[in-house]
Amino acid sequence: MTAPHDPLWREAQYNARAAVPDHPAIFARWAERSAAARAEGGGRALLDLAYGSGPNETLDLFRPESARAPLHMFLHGGYWQALDKKDFSFIAPPLVEAGIAAAVVNYALCPAVRVGDIVEQMRRALAWIWREAATLGVDRDRIHLSGHSAGGQLVAMMMATDWPRHASDLPADLVKSGLSISGVFELEPLIGTSINAKLGLAADEARAASPIFVEPATAAPLVLAVGGRESSEFHRQSETFGERWSAFGTPVRHMPLPDRNHMTACEALAEPDHDLFRAAVELASGGS
Image (cartoon, rainbow, N blue to C red; front, side, top):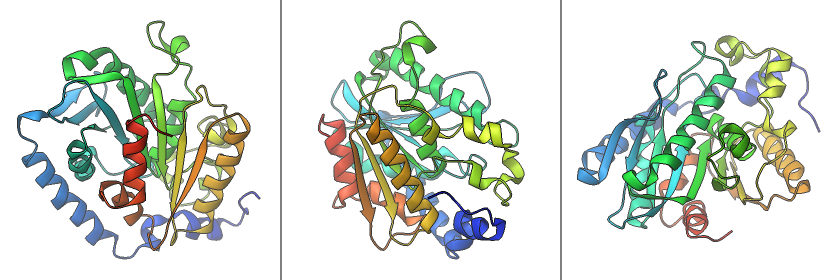
């Protein structure tokens, strides 16, 4: 099933802020928890590391005491046009407590750049992490990704990247797993909605940036999570994307998040007693 063409219906399906009226309070909660995470990170936290020279090409790295820890790299959402890495530092402390380093990555925002530019920035971030891993104290052979909403699209595009073709020194299996929360894998339905005002997507550009139309470049496992209170389109996107990539041999696990909306879904990643957090730890530990 594809998305209907009615722009009002699509607006209601994809306008996540309108669907969650208390999102300002949720964002304030994220900011408070994230500020505390950065303040408590101590000498093991490295903030505003530059992975490139372009706009917003920085990341924050939170590290456990153990050397050569596996790395969980989080790519934030905001429809490629809003939010910042500093809003999501709260995902790091539980991972660090579990012995996993956490990188929270920034990127430039639309309309200053195109969605395809952001994809390239994330490739630069991953390549930089892999090359600098020894200095940073993380294991470059255990790099795992997660992303929320637009970040889910970015995770999938990283898993579809032919890394040796991108740069000859990079391994084909650079990304060891992916975890998408409420991901957007087909961008064309956004055309005609208010979301596209800053993205400026045309049909051909939307298709090129849609992971649902590309093949995975890795056999790494992929977890697809969606909140039970999210729109039918967010469920359709993950279900259809999972079916297509499963056909290519990707081990796909679907994870429902009952009673979660589009905003609260990503909070499960920072809850040690939640299945989503346990899945992230299992992936970083080498499980699938």
